[in-house]
Amino acid sequence: MKKIKPGLIACVVLMLCSCARPQNPVSAPSYTNSSEPDELAAASSHDSQTGRLPEPSPQIPESPFSPEDAEPYSGQPYTVVGDNIPYFSEEEFTTSSFSRYSELDELGRCGPAYACVGPDLMPTQERGQIGNVRPTGWHTVKYNEIIDGNYLYNRCHLIGYLLAGENANEQNLITGTRYLNVRGMLPFETKVADYVTETGNHVLYRVTPVFQDENLLASGVLMEAESVEDEGRGVCFCVYVYNVQPGIAIDYATGESAIAPDARTPESAQVSRQPAAESTAPSPEPNTEVTGSMSQETPAPSVSAQTPESAQAPFAEPASPQEEQPQGTAYVLNTNTKKFHYPSCRSVDQMKEKNKQNYTGTRDEVISMGYDPCKSCNP
Image (cartoon, rainbow, N blue to C red; front, side):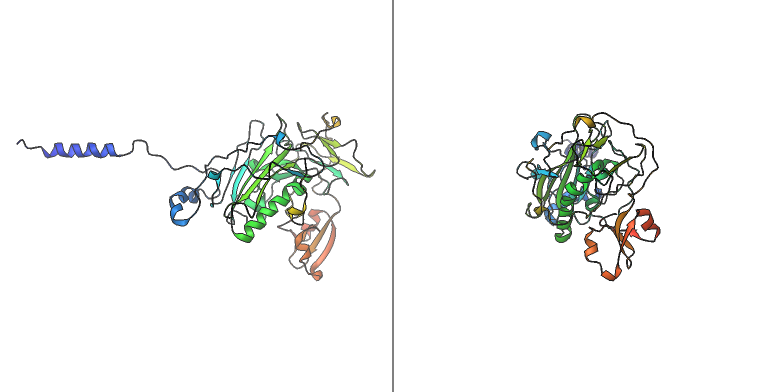
C-alpha cells in the first residue's frame, strides 16, 4: 500500500475548510439617524432571550396616502383618515426606541419622519434654539389681533421635541401655521408623550408632510401612531392635519399670505412683515397650549384648504425693524422657581398663588428680569 505524504493530507484539509466558509458574509444592517445605533444593531441577536420585538428595516417606510384620501378643510384642524388605523405593517413594530429623518429633496423640503418613541428617547433637557433653521416656504409675517401669538408661521417639528428631543434638525422642521402647530399637531403629540411617560411603553410614530407638486409649503401633515406593547389599545390614530390659518389666505407655492377677503377682522388689525432673509424671527413651538384630552375634539368630516385667488399673486415684503416677540404678550411669572409661562400652561394651575405674578410685555424683557422660559410651554 502506497503511503500518503503528510503535506498532501494538510492541503486537502485546508481545501475542505475553505469550501465550508461562506463566500459572501452578510454585514450587519446600518441604522442611520438612529438615537442608539449600537443597541439597535445588536438587539436582533438577543430577541429570543429578552422578549423584545425584532428591529424594523433601517429605511423609512412610506404611507400609501394621497391627499385625495382626506376631505377638504371645513373648519376643524384635522380629519380622521380611513378608519383611524395607521398604515404600519407588522414587520415595523419594535420595542427599541429610535428616530429617523428623510433627506431633504431637491427643493429642500422635508420627507417623512419616523420613530419608535420610548422613555429613553424623550428629552431630559430644555429645548434649544431653532431660529437658525429656515424651512421651505418660510416668511416672517405677523397678523396682529388676528392670530394667537400674532405670528403666522412656526418652525414645526415633525417628530415633536417632547417626543424625540430633536432641536435644530432641518430634516425635522417644516414651515407650519400657528393653527397647525397648536390646534392640530400638539394634542396628538401630547397624547403620545403622556402615554409613554405613564406606561413606559413604546409608540410607533410617523409624520409625513404632504407637498402638492412643487409647492414650498406643505398642505398638511399625515400623523400616524400606534402603541406597541398593548397592540394599539393605548394609542392608535391616523389623521391628516391641515396647514391652514383661519382668516388668512396662503399661497402654498411660495408661502406668501394675505388677509382673506371674507375674513371678519377688527379695523385695528395690523399686518407686519419682515424681510424673508430674517432667520432669527421667533416662533417657538409651544408644548402645552392646548388643554384637555384629544377625545374631546370632534374630528372634521372633512381636507385641503382652497387658496383664494387674492393670495396667488406674490407681494414684496418691505423691510421693517425686526421684532423678536409680539409687544404686550401676557405671561405668568413664578417668583419662586424663576420660570415664566403662557397663561394657558398647565403648570400655572399648579402654581401657588403667593408665587404667581402676571406680567405683560416682551419675552426679552422677562428674560432680562432673570426668568427662564418654561420647559413645557416654551413661551
